[in-house]
Length: 246
Image 1 (cartoon, rainbow, N blue to C red):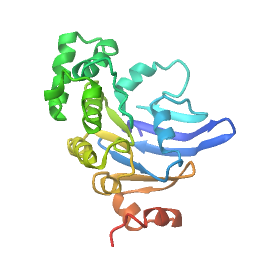
Image 2: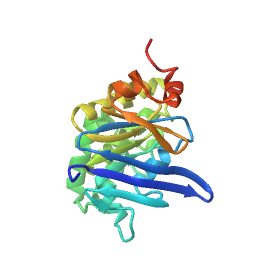
Image 3: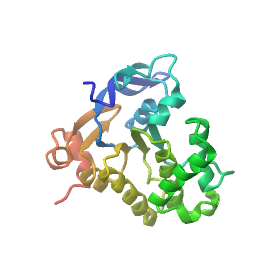
């Protein structure tokens, strides 16, 4: 199993007496685009936050290239430079320009020079179509533009895996497409991605692996053809009934 980038083994997470995740197992291989779908409150975002060490699992393992990062003594910042995250609410620094937002992690975590960080940041800002806005501050750009900056910032750290936590849910409908287009281009380039999403067309058409979560459990997983085309569980069929093609 050494070829797997991430392995989640028997992962559970409780907040007080409320068990949000129950015995989660799955793997992420290089180049996988995994969409995690399910109703609100099913544990999808908590799973992503555990994988990125923003939440501490109650039990279980998260193996990154075979090493358990959920144990004590792990350098979370160094790990997150390999396993980046794009948040629903962008999480940009409002007191920094677009360019500075994409440089700061490279300088502070990766110890790059400012010039090296600037060149690398520009490369990814051009990639997501945000190069004309490098001197703008977050309050001066739209939600879709903020999310594209957030993606560029994550990419500038050269992560091995990118986690997306409902990256379009805070956007106006007309801005969703511009973010999904960037994500689709990344997928086509072979970026390993783990995406919590309500965008069923993205999950069906761009992913190679779909995980359906229900009440803290992985209810069903497989290829998009399997999960969307021939779901095995009644809960999956019920959830997908309004999205499935006729």
